[in-house]
Image (cartoon, rainbow, N blue to C red; front, top):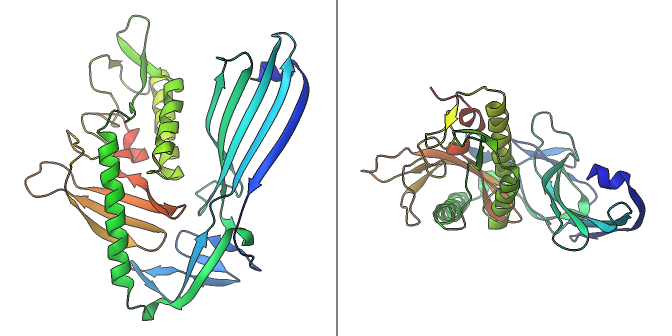
Length: 324
């Protein structure tokens, strides 16, 4: 892409579209892992897994979308060159080493099937401060007097269980991704890394399900990048074709379910560890008689929908660990 841009004669057009809605407030909401801050006061705090103090019921408007198009002409190739950038904003607490407004590229692909060259880029920008025009406060309550908190938690857990069952059904379907899109050496004897065209398609497929948070998708992306580097730099033992991987991820156990054989009609139940209006931590427990591992999951509410943000089978530290 840099070669094309160096030889680009002229940029013809550049435009942007920004779609936002929501009522105006005087201040912004700042998000933290354990609470939120609004107008200098701390709200939505947890103590031993229970809510206490003042609680804000607010909705983040998620219709904010940024689209841009850059077009030009490559003299050497005698072709038009078009760059399409789609960018969304994710409001959440910043992780370690992240900066406000940091942009992640989720996919970058080049389409040469038509007469012109087309670059399609999908980005997400991370923000921990929600602009006033992007949130609506429904109410501010003293959560200690909320008699419906138990019913609310149970309802949320039921919704999350439904999401997890959808994940099981999808992972057992023809639409499921190949978790390890590995490539072999010229002799077809060992795997030497991963096919990043297939990996980008995997990322796009995960996004299209609407079942996984940006956090989960980026974690999977980092697992593949780290494993690829490890294979190329001989950090793992040689992974022979037909054998199990020489790292932990997807090695003899299905990371979607921590079980051997996933079926779309899987049964089990969730035990609540911690849950509030925007995130949760739970344990999936298989029925008695199943010789499978119970496992931890986490969810986060995005666009008003519960999404999987963590599955124990995709734990980054454990996944990239050398087997044996």
